[in-house]
Length: 424
Image 1 (cartoon, rainbow, N blue to C red):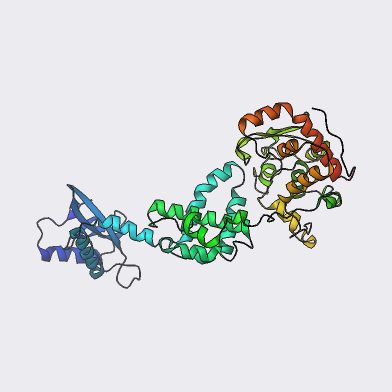
Image 2 (image 1 turned 45 degrees about the horizontal axis):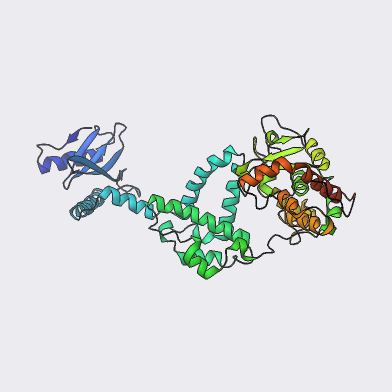
């Protein structure tokens, strides 16, 4: 790019600059003003102002804005460009890098919502690999819009711990699990803000310290009864309504109850994890809360349910979502359980949760059978380390199969009490 300023008098520079500003198609190059200010004309004819200076033996260039002609609201006039150049000279004299300062100013104006978009773009790559990109992204956006909407338009750098507290306090006890998820998601977005230099830190959504002092126990533990559980006496009647239903959400919910597993353990189940002939389901360690592979012996009811689920070509997920290659949505089972009957749900909002059926299963085994407590806990994958898990997988599968078959029989109303213990 040519710089047309050397050996020209101030009057000649001014004339050349004025001509370039007026011309619709001036020759490409740089047209000098005073104060290290230049009009840059690109090969396409676009005009913009740049400020040039030397730092550590090399030329630096700061873009100031475009020039699109007099009267344009987006155009930077010669007068405005000169003022911007003067400001840059003041910064340099004070030891400030004008380019770094410009970047910092831009970051300081970034909103929480803009950073949320950027965070989700990164996370979606991992979610897409698991077939849950759309559902997870929607869940993040919905929860933050509903419960942290006031943060969305705020400059991320201005969000403080009182802003976060104001969002969380109204839902911390009443909606414990949701509140903890909202806090976690705010924290992750602000982690990005800190990493980019858009927030000075520390992270105002971190639980330890201020939030812990003002909110009390973590929301997920604030209420021990947050997972409402249907009394086991009502399970046969409930399952009589659920098991005949068609549809992915209904079948996935029924399978979760029959196997006493957690929502995501079932929701992300793959056909490649299941051996229908042997009646075994191997849940990989990365999907287990304890981080240890869990072998689930399947009852005949669970096996028959799986045989009724259609397999989609190119999709290894058992319970598939609406998006090609995806798993069923994160809230599908819960929605089916709690939505009103008139909306296609089972109408148990406030009375039961999907996770609560694990408690129902545990109560039934403890109250109505003589199965060993440790086998019941192993069915729930509670408290097992990698070594113990490996040993128990080798020795207790058939014991647990008896428990799961007895539970399935009870769910179908075939028996009410199991008083037999399988021999060791």
